[in-house]
Length: 434
Ligand SMILES: Cc1ncc(COP(=O)(O)O)c(C=O)c1O
Image 1: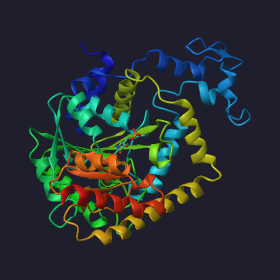
Image 2: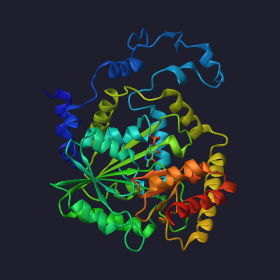
Image 3: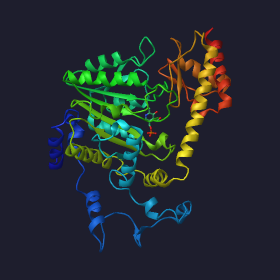
Image 4: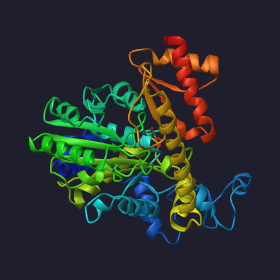
């Protein structure tokens, strides 16, 4: 039995592209006018006694363990900044600040209708929430054949659907726009879903400005055939672009108002962008040419419902600290710049060192220009064999992906050690395969 609120939200969303993508869970879910909504209402109006929230309070502040609070500077953070629940959907100021930053980083978004980002428990939670809302058992989602392995866990094993692959690179070693378009056209039925991640994990690739335009145009062409297309941009490593010709804006910015049949979703997170890997703060943002404010409100309610019934509420201290850094951080730009420069320096060393192995017939680096990683095609030989050999013989840790790709996270290797790391990888390949 569908709740009346869910029915109302479905009716609203059915007049937009989003209605075509709602899963059976997505159709059932809503944000109830229960404890959270009533508490929010009381927070604004119950000036005498507010007996709504299950939170031990005294003198207007949550009660707390001094052993924890003493690790924070008392004059800088109130107990409520650390110990209280965050509002459903996340701290309002943080959501606005994140949106403001998003538009600054993606000027193409200026003036376009996009939702207020919803706070999640990290980008993984963003992807799984999107999967819960818009992906049903048996559905397929298009994905390049070099991808973050958690997509498989989410869409295949958790949701019982499938990943529909196309080759990441074309014969000219560029992003395979034609392959992507064909995979979308080949999707069964009237809808197609795709997840794209730039800078990419594991390849470290981001399309050039020209390629990104081609990607956008190809998706628009698919939409023009009448197919409805959901595009989830996974922007986990946003900002780490090391080459001039690389596109510096998210695909989301180009798709936000591209076509009525395109449903654009941006998944991003403070995790890597703000270097707070353990905080668990991510975001979901929605846009489509077919949306008005009512559609965005309905999507907000659906998403809040999905979060409420899973983790209920996302990390409060993390949200507070990220907001403080964004709004009043004294070293924010300086620290980010320092990290960027360090990653860029490591990237350049990796590029230069790889020149020495250009003629290798054993390992072929995939094109890369951004992010944290580079990866090798093991040319038909077992990447797992190489990984275990490197670990056992040389105490070098790398990642095997589907037994045909070896990924190096050069982001976590000091500049002075990169030369040796690459040398050991090629030496090990030579020892086991020649
Ligand atoms: C491509 C990609 N997407 C999403 C994530 C998840 O990020 P989070 O730690 O915020 O869940 C990662 C993390 O490794 C990633 O590599």
